[in-house]
Length: 185
Image 1 (cartoon, rainbow, N blue to C red):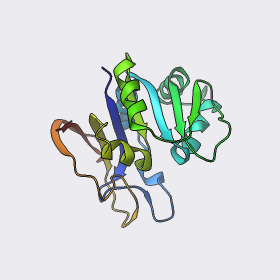
Image 2 (image 1 turned 135 degrees about the vertical axis):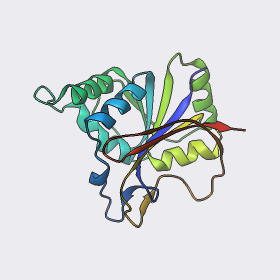
Image 3 (image 1 turned 180 degrees about the vertical axis):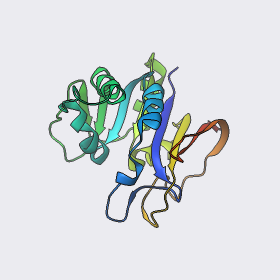
């Protein structure tokens, strides 16, 4: 059975975007980006909310030919991975291997996990909150940036309680800390 993984870059105080919606403070350097690439490589399907998809769909048409190899690696993985966008307002997508689902159905995601040969990744705190509440998330991968932004979009919902087991921790040269947890029942 595949795992459902929630991976996020967040501020030390727990936000994926600040009050103005900015997240430039979380841009990974080469070392962090390469590690993110390694973690994303086993993923066969990305589950995105509309806003997260609209940020990441730029990888579909971005010319990375003059960019560093680690950026090209991520772009290649983007193109090779299936994507599901959960949205009630989108009518079309701007990327290949992508479909729209109108609602997040926990039973359908559980079936996708059980039938998938490769892991799934849930992207975006809103959609991840639904998956956490439904008990579908198997693993959390957090990259904590060395910054406090004082408010914004929280990485976790206020109303979810999930017991965790620490599997891995790592420090990066730029001050980012990585924490990987397995959810416990």
